[in-house]
Image 1 (tube, helix red, strand yellow):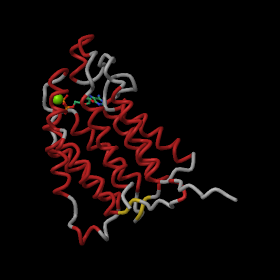
Image 2: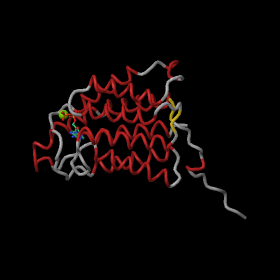
Image 3: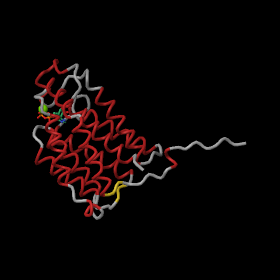
Image 4: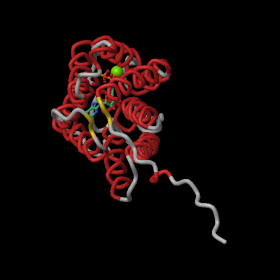
Length: 228
Ligand code: ADP
Ligand code: MG
């Protein structure tokens, strides 16, 4: 007698990310960022100027407002959705994080190109492009206590999960988990980039606000790709 087969995540052919999926990602990111805005601002008050939650709430609210309406979304490519969101964030978000998040989304959108649906490999390439864009603009490396400490391990974990046979939802979950761990690992670090670096050794012992918000944005991707 054979044991009943256990359901495995990789047996479900994961769907790709279309225009509606990309918009759902931005909306979910806006929800998570807004729900946590006070916490993000408190984190920034400890090692920065106490505006990170406010900045991102404003930016992602503008990104949601800039999305095509539901009817148009059916015809809109996911790359275009991310580029639109990135532009809105750059124009509405103060602080260092506006241009950094805007660049991340625009680069991710550009990487998706004209495809009407992005498969897991394309989303992985988009995360890598986002990381490269943020590093080009901000010149931060892993260990500098910035959003890179969440984004870099997330992009790597996504690629590793995909190579192991995970679908889009599974790869996105791996990325979100890695981003959470990466953000948590910023606590003992001394900031070498951004406003927190002005504090020198006193920046150690605090969670980096940008790494923390980056983990929320990746959790949002896992949430929407994990929905059936
Ligand atoms: P500001 O520091 O201008 O007030 P925010 O408070 O909105 O901007 O964002 C602060 C976050 O931006 C930091 O916690 C850090 O994660 C991120 N950050 C700052 N400088 C850089 C950089 N050069 N590269 C990557 N991320 C950075
Ligand atoms: Mg700030």
